Length: 113
Length: 113
Image (cartoon, rainbow over all chains, first blue to last red; front, side, top):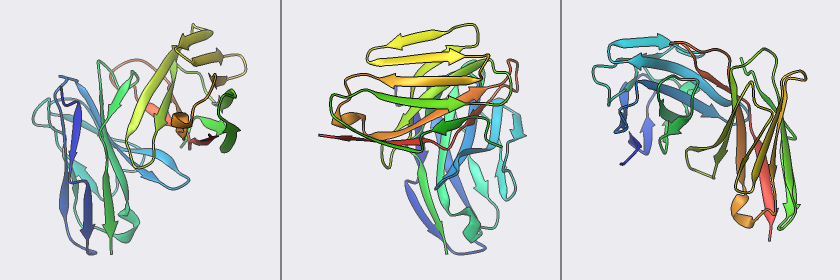
């Protein structure tokens, strides 16, 4: 099993550009989530999904959009990038619920100029 | 808002020594988890302890949970240089479909060879 995969590994955007961060898992986990990690802030939850077709907001959802059309994929969209969105983004999955052990992807490092 | 707070923020020890890291939280929890993050990598799950458990072991790791004091400790015995990483505690406050983890800001552990 590949586990949780994320693409791209690194991305540079200009302010106002949009992009999609990809996340996929092959463990048939119902729960998937997106976090951002900033220095001194730990991990903060952006959005999460408890199954295909079901998404909800986390602690810091503004400026981000998600959808979950399949169990395997959970893309994160930045609608209009801002320098404040410069961060490292992690996708994670777990079974059966979000409060159980989470499996993390390797992360996407995003720089917004 | 962060539920778990780790202590100390940074710890430097000699190889072979034991490392003790603490986590405190504010509200009742369903379980508490510890994760490790090597530099530039995603988080890796180490151990999960449920609210009705007091102690758990996994290899050189020992985790305790004191729900009356709302605190947990992670002990790494006979530390190695490879244990150098950031360590995060995460709490799950409830069960059910919306159960999710809240992470602390992390502890940086340096093990000197």
